[in-house]
Image (cartoon, rainbow, N blue to C red; front, top):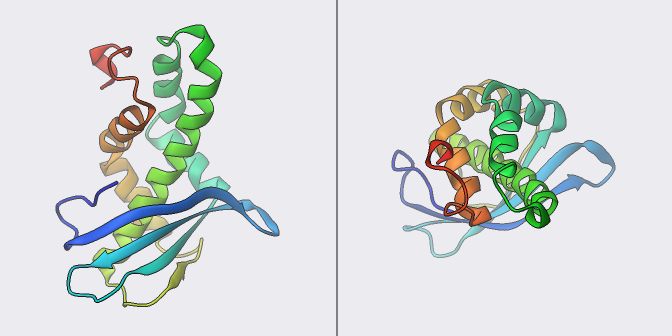
Length: 153
């Protein structure tokens, strides 16, 4: 995973996730390692997002409809596994967009958690703006570009 050009030079890698937050089946989290070039070491940033926001974001960018079009083009024996993987990748991408929003607002060189109630409106707006990039990244990670028709890439 890489940051978009408008984000300062950070190296961002997914460490873990998506997983449901322990004790909260409505909150999904991803953990990222983040390192800015000027920092001696990296930090871990936990990104929490409520299931309802994933649902809202997915609807706003028509992710499920798009995914159905992609999955329908895959060989039958790949469909179920690819659909589950795509949903995880979507969650990772939405978490990454939220992390990028936090970076734009400024983060410190310390481990932190972006709580689910933080940057809600910013995330809604950014995911709408980044919809094509999110979908493109899901396709790339699924490694099905050759199978899927050009109209979905």
